Image 1: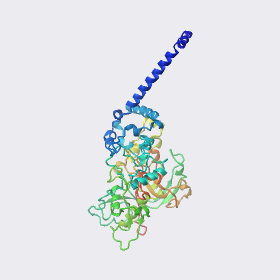
Image 2 (image 1 turned 90 degrees about the vertical axis):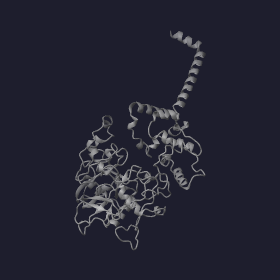
Image 3 (image 1 turned 30 degrees about the horizontal axis):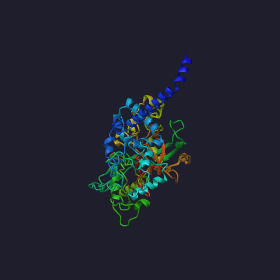
Image 4 (image 1 turned 120 degrees about the horizontal axis):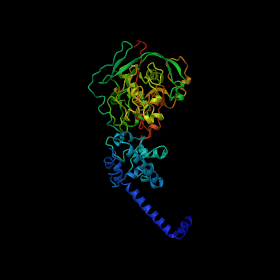
Length: 517
């Protein structure tokens, strides 16, 4: 039998070669037709049915422009052919098929995917570069020239979508220029409070901001001893959380919630500066002769207008104020001190952790095991986790819907403070150092951290954080360079972060030692 097959093949070799060649050509033609068919806008639309596809695409500058050029789906969402087009198409195709068979697209959080962080997963940088080979056309404005010069100097670490997130899919809420309208009308409400709250004893109080309708709650935090940091046995513990040291803290007041947009915009409306001059100078209070009265604010140089929309279009009101840099938060505290006659400031890292723990030495101020909550645990990825208890107290990655939430969405800790964990991470006044606790001595009173550094401490985690990152002892720090990539200005703003939407701050008020209040 084998001899007969061999003889047949030898006699018909040319025929077999011709048939193979024909089949190859036919397969190539069919394959190319399949690739061509599955690369059309209409085919993409048949699977990708969500709010950010065709309606927003046809309103974008990639579809509706003076040149009459229409950019198709695959032009942006797949790399050029010389950059692995077919491999990426096959990968995304299999991913789409899997999603179509196993998931309900109505349950996807499309807004969460339309962010600077997520865009590089869906958009090919190589395609952007291929179409826009000339970064300095004659029609480019000065702001664009500055931004493209910065890009050309940092191409390895920047994405085109850092600045051009909405060119392919139009977003009517997006702002691409200096937002001089932001906060317009703030600080001009009917005046209700003519003076701040007078303190007669050490107790929680409601602060009134003179010259505005704004008030906020301050919680009296009793002094005492506590152990800062986490033991080596704590799940997800990192080296910078130790060694554990026992320290002593004096009494202080802390805001019940993070500084809200309502509170911040009173400050912004009364102190904002137009132009770029204040961005190149140091911030803070400048002596002004003749300034007086609780409502006098001319002595504080406030922020210049931001680029874009600082609230991310999530809403203002009582949501926590975000996207401001450390200098802005610090200047806010100086302004608040001036108009109220009290001494407001950012908390030290020790004060923050003491207030967060509220007497607990467990990972959280409530009962719970980080390992049972974390999505990084293999068991939880398969079977899910019982997050009922943590959901009562924390806004984090599993329940935040990828944005900040109102402060009344969670219960307070035993001290009466809300959102100490989650929602937004919070600035502390300390410089960050990974071995800061090593320098502490047991029994030290009111420590203030290192004398200098390059980044500031932030604590508490945010709406983006996994439960492992929102433990009471978990430490983090600012990343000023990384969080300013999108800012097109030269020099970059000293007031606003362009790429950080998960950091805010809450204030501390010092006890007046002379009166004990």
